[in-house]
Amino acid sequence: MSLPPLTTLPNPIRPAFDKGSREGSVIVNIGPSHPATHGTIQIVAELNGERVVRTDVHCGYLHRGFEKECESHTWHNLIPYVDRLNYCSALINDFAYCEAVEKLMGIEITPRCRYLRTLLAEYSRIADHLTCTAAALMELGAMTAFLYLVTIRDYIYEHLADLTGARVTYSYGRIGGLAHDVPEGWLKRLEEILDEMETFTGRVHGLVDRNRIFIDRTRDVGVLSTAEAVNWGFTGPILRSTGAARDLRKDTPYLAYAELDFEVPVGIKGDNYDRYYVRMREIDESAHMIRQLVDLLPAGPLCVEDRRCTFPEKELVYTEIESLINHFKLVMEGPQVPPGEVYSAHEGANGELGFYLVSVGGGVPWKVHCRSPSFVHMGGVHRMLDGYQLADIVPTFGSVNMIGGECDR
Amino acid sequence: MIDAAFERVRERLAGVAGGTDVSHGVLVLLIEPAQLLATVRALRDDCGFDLFLDVTAVDWPEREPRFDVVYHFYSTREFVRVRVKTRVPAADPTVDTLVPLYGSARYMERECHDMYGIAFRGNDDLRPILLYEGFEGHPLRKDYPKQKEQPLVPYREPKP
Image (cartoon, rainbow over all chains, first blue to last red; front, side, top):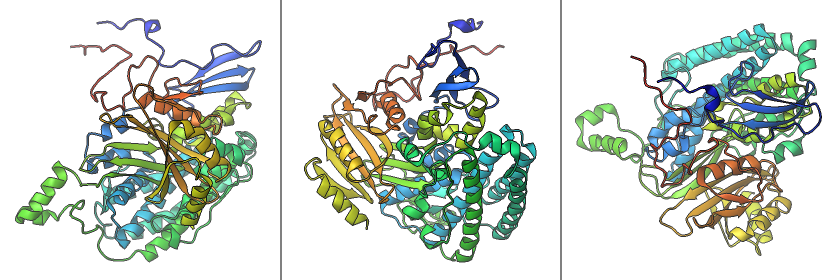
């Protein structure tokens, strides 16, 4: 069978406008597969010369029915799926989801698990910010800075692979605990990587911060005021870049954040430069938090002793009938979650990552909804693109850090 | 502190919202669809809920009215969350849009319309967002089969 000619395939989108609003303007389609935008996103832009008059942003090209699929698997089986939402900081997704289920079940996790989750969440945040900053700099031609930052990110990926067995999608969270404890020597290597990271981020600061080209491309580009950012639902580093010190880790402390000493970096005027700088400063704060957490990390059990969710020791499964049945029930029927609904939010690397879960009892969720920061940001990103140059779309879009897996679900 | 904030919201909304309840640290308001705009306006203007987090729906096929439309709001001053729930029937799943109050509502309502077919009265841009133009049905409704496929591009047999 031969393919029909391309022109007969239906257009998957209906643009908001197909005619210019004024004489001489041009409609340009950017994406969904464009070498200069990371993330599968389509921007239909009306241009007046080189200036962007208005934009219509379309996402959904990576939609894979995450929420529908969740309704036919047990609560445990969803952990690999939530990993694939924001695949740059998968552990934060894991822990946010697990905490939402634990709230529904009324479980309080063990102190060691709480500190370890906090540590790993901050470690993931570093990896995420490194990725975003590296990609945004590369798109402006800063290849050296890109390589410096992804070198460290790769150290972190390899290091997390030592812990979890996977480089990107870890499936490491468990309802009521974590998959297993940290291996011997892992925390020592962590300290080495943090030191190395500070050397490299220092070099990037030296290369970029006062660089004329970088400043010209980012200062006063994609400006957002605090009021506008709140109205359009921006959270996370983008909201903080406008000068509002809003951070869920400070404002509604969860995990072990209430016991940590850290600052919330903010920008001055919410432009691309501020977003770059806020992310770089957050990396420093995360490293500061991780060092405190290594010292605070208590000994003790990792998972709660709750037979509704925690798997029994493998040895007992093979030797003891109760544990065998417990294991079987957990695998076949899933953890028994009482009826109810919960909204639980963590400060993801991009903003407020919320899970809204509805349970009717039993081992399978009735509804799982993910409030993903990237999706909400895509609803407001036109405020940062309209009125600037066509070439500014690339750095502005890079500074938003849209993650397709999380945006399109 | 959170309790005090919730108490203030309750006082101010005494005339508007029906039941109020606190569930897992979130204040829950159950309201009639007709009161939605007034309630949310009061939440935003009088109670400081300036960040519109999320809108989604929950499908209860056995129940009448069939859909819960669920909103979440956050106050960036008091650091509390509120959930607003309202019920709409399958025959006329319509609620008022929140676009005049929050810019972010435009995109999120599009998603909810995609997934559940909830109509947002007054939102003039309910084009598909996560789905594509011409997609039939609303995939997150419980009666939409999980395995159903609606490809835009016809399948090609693999070449031998």
